Length: 431
Ligand code: GDP
Ligand code: IMO
Ligand code: MG
View 1 (cartoon, protein in one colour):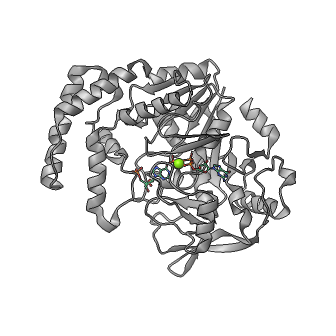
View 2: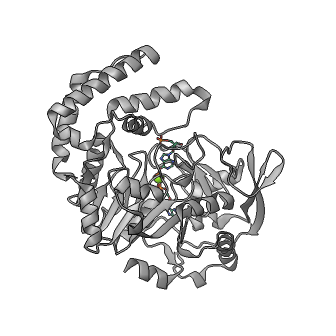
View 3: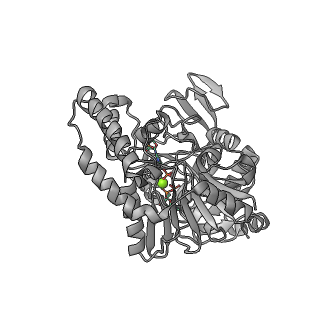
């Protein structure tokens, strides 16, 4: 059974959680393959509101196995808290597992994240301060602590000792801060390992067995394409491969396991943190969108920067990810607007360009086409034919530009506020 991948096509928060939850209904497995608890994936089901950071967004269905995969970085304190929160909301978490090979975020990673950001001053990235970057740095430096190391006290002791001695030199000599204590961290993490031990699995074999047993697997991306370490707006990016390419390295699977590449885009753009944003709206329309779309970070509560849909960036994202199924979310948020702008070119230092530049900076600005708004509530609509004419024109414009058909349109945060545009394709993929 070929597997499905969900990825964000912009700067995150496209509604991956909502769409993963929707598609999890017909999946046996939902697997995270990169990122960490920098993610905040929201799911609304009637009056219940879940924000998931590490636990895959299939967890609401008790029959779905949820794996925090090998390419993820895991903060055990955060994971345990998340599991406890879910249990307190009567969600069964017995099917949540974590990969032995995943790397562990330690308290010194969170501190390093904060100190590095402070040292960058006005060039800071605007990270989530969750220690994600420093955890991946240690992984690449080959000094990281993996989940399986927590299960071997001798190895854990040695690795932690080495790391804390090293980090204390960095803290005191470079950042002029207090050193941290080995013993309390050692004891704290041994407790976490005890709590999590029966969830730790060899995810690589589990995923391969599932695939060969024809199980339906959904890989859930975190962050999004334009935050990708290789292809995003570097250095204003996160530290993992957020693209569909990251699934293979992050979950230990070959490329031929994958078939349906589902890209999620908002009907406009948002970004949290710093960095270039060619279609950013600097006026009261940003406030309207932020208010209507509740554009505040699910993890950090920061107000999200808002902008018009950027088709240059979207096409670039679809190209790198090999997207063959498009999902457009938050279309309802644009309902109040008279005119909706859509970016089809960039202006860069006086020159018009039609590609996403590798050295994209503040000097790149969107060039727009104005489309008429539809000025009516669409949040109750379930059939594509019932959408207002101008709304369909907006969707058609996007599809024509990207040369892609839309699979699904989301018109509200509730689980059932969706329009399945291509029903036969949807049924083919998800039944
Ligand atoms: P993720 O990180 O990609 O999972 O997205 P977030 O959960 O961080 O942010 C998306 C926000 O938009 C959440 O508050 C969702 O509940 C909400 N949302 C998702 N789809 C829609 C939609 O179609 N319309 C509206 N109004 N809100 C939506
Ligand atoms: P989800 O999965 C939006 C952003 C941060 C910052 C940059 C680097 O909910 O879409 P990091 O802490 O990763 O080192 O921060 O990446 N960022 C996100 N923005 N949604 C996310 O996740 C994000 N995860 C990280 O704001 O700009
Ligand atoms: Mg989010």
